[in-house]
Image (tube, rainbow, N blue to C red; front, side, top):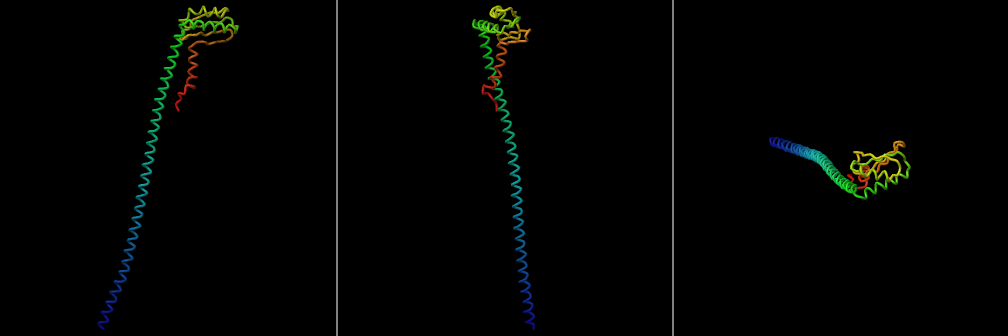
Length: 198
């Protein structure tokens, strides 16, 4: 009977150990699965956070790049506009100097006489010719070329040359001054010079 008791105890011990081992193995497997799942979750969360951080950094870099690009574009436009202004000023300075040089030539007087004679064909009476102060001596030639009663006066606003004819009675003004001509050419020059800034 003692033997049976020992055998029975041994059997229970072995059974308890076997059941315990199974439960321990199950718990260890569950712990491994929980650990594995936690590691996967942590890894996914780390990847997501890294992705968000990367995405945020990319957005910040794109924004900084856009700002730098915009500033560079503005600076380039500013430099181009300055260069365009310099070129335009140089062209018109040279043109004005050529007009001043022409205004002291014999051809200048002939041009003014021809323009006055052409205007005489319009048959305006009581006209006044205005010239630059330095062209006062040419007024007589202009009036003679017009061939009708007219008056000649100096106008301090005319700087480059030419003349302006006014017929107050008819409200007519014919502006043949180089000053107006060159101002009108500026618009044409800006439109046709190819110095556009895009």
